[in-house]
Amino acid sequence: MSTLPTPGAAPTPGQTVGPFFHYALPYEGDAELVPAGSAGAIRLHGQVMDGAGVPVPDALVEIWQAAPDGSVVQQAGSLHRDGWTFTGWGRCATDRAGHYSFSTLLPGSTEPGAAPFFAVTVFARGLLDRLLTRAYVPGDALDADPLLASVGPRRDTLIASPDPQGLLFDIHLQGPRETVFLTFPGR
Amino acid sequence: MTVPILSTQADVSLEIAAIADQHDAASPGAQPRLDYTPYRSAILRHPTKDLHHADPETIERWAPCFGPQDVDPLEADLTIQHSGEPIGERITVTGRVVDGDGRPVRRQLVEVWQANAGGRYIHQRDQHPAPIDPNFTGAGRILTGDDGSYTFQTIKPGPYPWKNHRNAWRPAHIHFSLFGTEFTQRMVTQMYFPGDPLFALDPIYQSITDAGARDRLVATYDHNLTVPEWSTGYRWDIVLSGSHRTLMDDEEPDA
Ligand SMILES: [Fe+2]
Image (cartoon, rainbow over the protein chains, first blue to last red):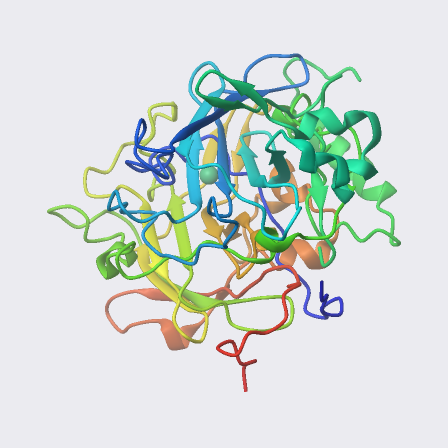
């Protein structure tokens, strides 16, 4: 991995997405990276919860992932999906029960043996800046993953669990099961 | 912690001042504090554990791509989405999106949304009894140019009341959603207008405890962008966080 030096230009700060994003950010087909029920489609879904265990009905979840063969997709078309192009990116606003749901493909390993995961971004009213995390695909590759090895007992909060249609990944903003959120060099 | 059920502006201003006094020069506070409880909705929605330091893996060193099929150029004009002219002060907002190394973020998606001139959103949850403008929706999209530039036409949004505390008002702002060249640079923020008297009172703006960082959210009035007999102009540049990826052959640094 090559890391550029910490940049000199001062970054613009983030701010909360607020309560009024629903008419601007969600769009038709946003959460369907592939048509639901199509060949190879899986569901990645879960609930966003606050520190009292109450579902968050005004959160926005985004995923960004590799293709099943592990390649990084650089295809436009996420905002007007043509039904044939896998862009690797999707967005889903939570419903009244704090639930989000994507129809997508399983990401592959980007390097031999690397544990595949969905890169996840969370926005919400009350959340002053976006949160970044990973939803790992369960499997043997997890044992060798450096991030999972470094987080200690909260490791399970980063691993999706199998369910009948695909994978379940709940996001706890706070509380005893608080999800591990990530920060990267340069911010 | 105990928080009064319905605080006054004076209560909240005292909390803002107390946190500002603790402001630690060693940790500059250039991003909002997630645990900034003068913003009441943050109380149960902020992580209590420190963010975990991670090195970006391959997928996190890339960002999704958007292209001409995603964004109609007309989406950059929020004043022409209906049959009539919206009410309010026509403005142009323009600037550049660059990464932490100063490289332009090219052909990337910018999404904006805002209240109308009276401070009302077209959103079913907005209860502010200011009029809805039938000629203004307040949402737009732009694809940045090869120099990272973006431009859109809109109406200057009004300040609006909210229920954080009694007599709470947000300074006028436009919400921005930004992508970089890497997943780690994803950001949502708000652009403000110069000289707003509500800045000192607003817990969302004040959640950034570093004054210099807060200033970076404020656009500059630019008379060169003002169009005679038509509209006024504001400039606002956006710097995303640093990048981690080696430059590819097709990604020459800006000359
Ligand atoms: Fe707003």
